[in-house]
View (cartoon, helix red, strand yellow):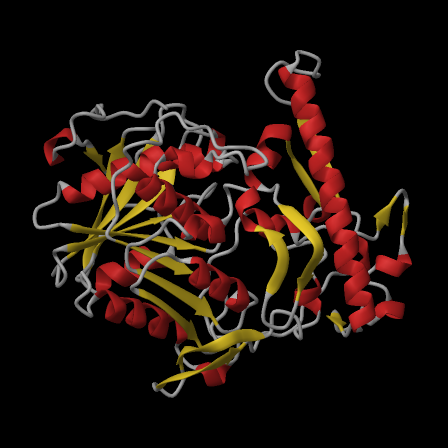
Length: 454
């Protein structure tokens, strides 16, 4: 990636070695204008930072750094992170915050998860070069959760942690040993990684017609198309999850067969192949019982800290207050929502995870998943994380149970699970009575960072 400004070598990590430019600078190819302009407010200013390993950052610098020893990094794969909420919110609370992008893939497209890690390491080293900074915390929101989990596990355990024989497709280990160590990690409503895609498989897709016995969008199985709400029986759920697991096995077997053909010189291309997986939803779309029927992934198993709208905090079983949300009939065969348009290697690295015969999503758990079969698996990587870790879930979303699974797998002794009552995935309240959930989210993050552990 070519950009105007000072070139930075991996070895020259002192502050003076980093080039700084206004945020409106255009990339060398002229493809894209960075959306965020330079900002100076009474609370913070911003500065563009060019980093090695095809990465770039937008540094939010507080006018009054009330926490000068602690700096944050925020990142999310395949996204321009410069304008994400956390930068403004945490800078306003006195934290230096670096919003990190990886530009090794065109226009913020897909990349294998491990490709992001060297750039994160350079961001950690950059922040440690700033005057007074000696603690660096990595924060990931949503799909950024599996990325910071991967970094946390590999930075502590080394490249072997993501490349063992138990992996369907081991990570590419080059450049992954000796990553800069972190002082803490924060999962903001983080996903489970590869499983998030696997859980979107629609087992009803069979040829040109839908198999009604496995169709979660069929009225006969409990779906109301008008309200987009599902009410499914235990018998249907059992058939549905068995169908998902069977299709998952088939998709993985096909991808591995194509990989073996490529590696034997018998593929359509020498390095990789296009792969379209019909029926596997994209991002938050797809066939997920827990989205249409809120009885699935409904609450945590054990009491955790709930940040209530009235300002009090209480230890309790945390119930999701989300509304159901299904799909309309005309979207069930749409390429944009109900198919993975990817490649063989990218699918295997990002979305392939094994499920067993007892795979199911219950009211408070996800069972029958081999978390260790994928390196893009947040629970598996959490087992290598020993630094203080916060799992902060949003109470008006479906990631309460995944958040608890991540929390349970963490090796850290100092770990916290909390949920913001009534907050949506984007931190806003889902109903007015839940108040300013955005403020409550970042106030609690500030509080957790300030409790003496750093």
